[in-house]
Length: 258
Image (cartoon, rainbow, N blue to C red; front, side):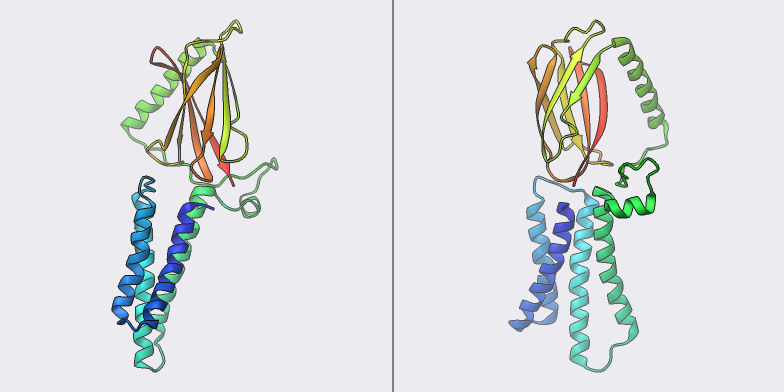
């Protein structure tokens, strides 16, 4: 399961437990709410040290933890006053609960896509293959994007002139650890030596590369290494082949782990 979903709903459960413990030791409601929201948040900050998930994900955790603590605080005040609770506070509390569930669901879908049965039934697949519904990023429509498209066309032209025959194995294996082999031949079928090969791994839509794996030369024209995926979900892996520090080949492939 995706780490973000685990930390979000795990922290939500921790807020409920800590608030209940605060009630048992007879802490004031406001202090219970602050501690119940703050302690899981501090634990989450410690957990993400060295594995920054993005400001949007952190903001979701902050809002969910403290919104839950606020709802519990409001419930405590209404119970102390007695009488029947008005429908407006009930609606507000239901909104925050539904918001937490909805954000968790969005995070799961963005990283791993819809569950396969739901995706197949809702989106359909004419050829009967798998349906991928994870977030695949955005494409800017500006001057920089036009320059990037021109660069891609020039790169494709250079690759065609180069005439390398490239065979990649291991990317479609299962599991978090995959043994990658890249075989490079020239137009005459002879192995190409002295290639600087590397893999770059990142999440769809992310702007930063999460992992760079240099591929060692194992044999004449054969380069490889062990790719360790940091977590399950949807990844983009980019193969880059260079000679004399000049990029000659670049290809991106999507990886999906359950």
